[in-house]
Image (cartoon, rainbow, N blue to C red):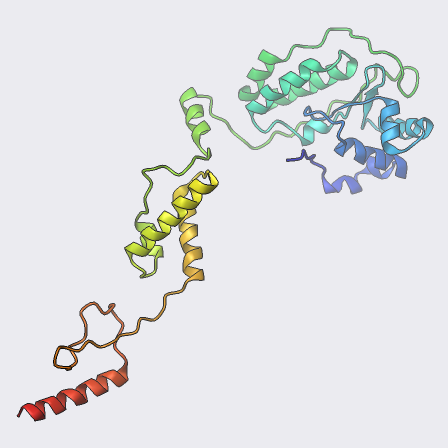
Length: 305
């Protein structure tokens, strides 16, 4: 499954974006969606020549268009260590849960020391503090503050740009809450895991109700069909009861109940018996047979007299 990035549609009505040249707008959209993006929101790995080549531009037009992004506080690159930081990325891509904070740590450790790494650290620190202790605790435990006074290699848009950084972004906390108790966390981890069909599984009352009068044997037969299918395919499912309910609904739609036909029985003397006891409830014999049956009975009575 491919990675994706959150890009709001209102970018087209943003004042800063609207003020950019067409080339700078294209570069900005590339920065938001490029494959050079790391799992850390807003951190891209690549040098100036690399990004220029990726866009199909010469170095000079790339430098000019990147300069527009930098001047608007939208991007802060360090070409010496080949790293670009997008300051507002954390605002639109906050960690979804504390486990994400833990997972990002290994990518954080691999980043080169530079002003942009420090900027990301400080913005992330402010973000997790606002999200609450469940997020702040793993951040404190796994993220070491960058070396103080780390000096980046020169090579940005112009002299003096390297140490500058745009204002810290406003932080919008996601509306999730998390339980810290180990027992609840353990229970939650079990929810939603797929598993193969248990040997002890069998249809329940809800399944027989979906049978729509077909009877228990029909439902049991469909259950065996699903079991064979699941074993043959190696299928795993979160809720096998729900899967079988869907299976039955599809089966009832594809195979509607056929109207039963009542065929009369005759005794050894060739006389018709009464209506058979095993006739399905609510299904009367054909009217023409009832009429003929009554007429035959009357003839028999007359003959016996």
